Image (cartoon, rainbow, N blue to C red):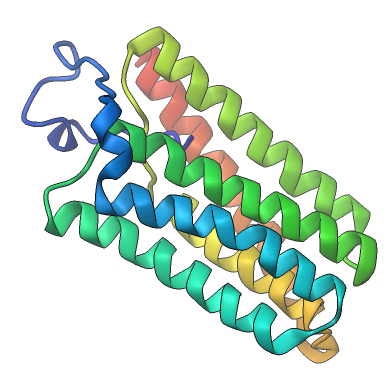
Length: 196
């Protein structure tokens, strides 16, 4: 869950009148099917990485990135934005980041402290998002810092997996800075949203 709510994304309703709505048929919307496809690529990526077979792993990673970029675009373009999509898309993203950070930590020398930092940050975001859903009955959506953070950490993990020693530590430092700025930004928005 991400901690930013745009009233205009809620079918023209004010936040006070907005009610979260998840329909059974939402799972069949094209953007949500792409999100599920992204989830299904994770075991294949992990399998090929574990075998150190990088070509199929990179192909599946490319598919993962493509579905991540396309699902939001198609949701807006096809007018298929759904509360289910707002929930499962970031959950699948968090699961992917978690899986590959743990893999990089176990097999590629990714620092344990950075693994813990990212997992704690993602857990806090998830808890805060669930709190907003429960308390306000609305689904938070992503903001700039959340998207940038996911992109940067995806790159950091990829650089560790590919063992690009010349740049992985530089990007690790950038990732930590972006993560801290993301936490500050979302923390401020969370406080403003809940009590402001």
